[in-house]
Image (tube, rainbow, N blue to C red; front, side, top):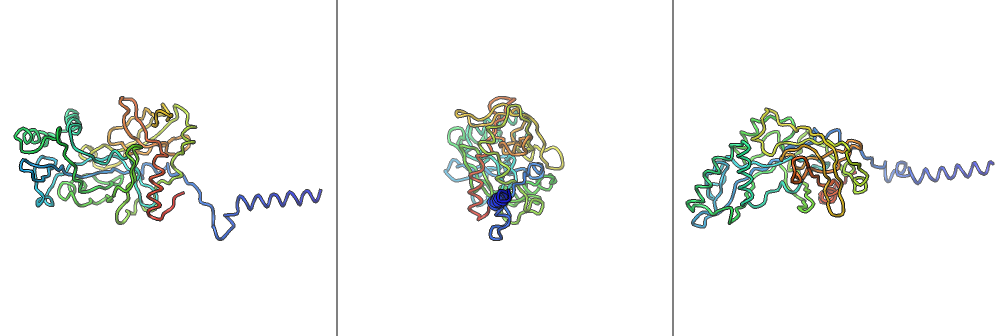
Length: 337
């Protein structure tokens, strides 16, 4: 009996060394732990904004730029331009000074689809596009500029940044109108470093000093659901997200902060359909919002698009973000739990 007790003690000790050895080994230090950050989703969800002008050619073949109100500038006048176009969505702060979002927020060519989208925006009551559209129609009719529906224009981005939640609207708007190339106060400049258009996931890097409000904060890889974890999600599971409108000019209150949205999972990825289906109510600016699976506290996906129906919001599965986020960490020499 005594020999059996000694043997049992030795086995127990050996298991302890195998399981907890890293904690006691000074060479390794304690094992990293996963701390779920979902409780900070509201505080880490930022408005992602991009300021840009449109670039095309005039009737003489000269490169010119157009502002939000339709004024035309040449290359030499570019630094004096004001009133840029503003578009964006939602980005969420991640550990290491990064921002996770979806890839489709990045601007592509300005063509027929862009014109149709602008017209739809005007029909919905956004009058900020009216001066531009009226001038655009006149320029094209007179042959002053190339027709964007047949000869796509391009975007000339001058600034990308995140607006921290709880920031005042008016000083940010004024700064953007008068000094669009300068990152406004209460904001942080960002740069796109990794993206996957097919999977609709992207990672930006915060440039310069990280604001104290989000320093050492952010989601980690541990917060993002794996393929196996998403497979275990049940239909009708409750979800939550925090998002912004597409354009700061559409913001009605004096403080810029994300708005909550609640819903449930209505369909999971399959071999033929890679997205997570939900009934999450979300406007267009909610693109890029992290969506929390409330039963586990983990991120199940990122708001991608409306799925073609008014009651369906599709999510980019969270694990699509993992690879490009890991690439970003590796490029910086960082690690994430």
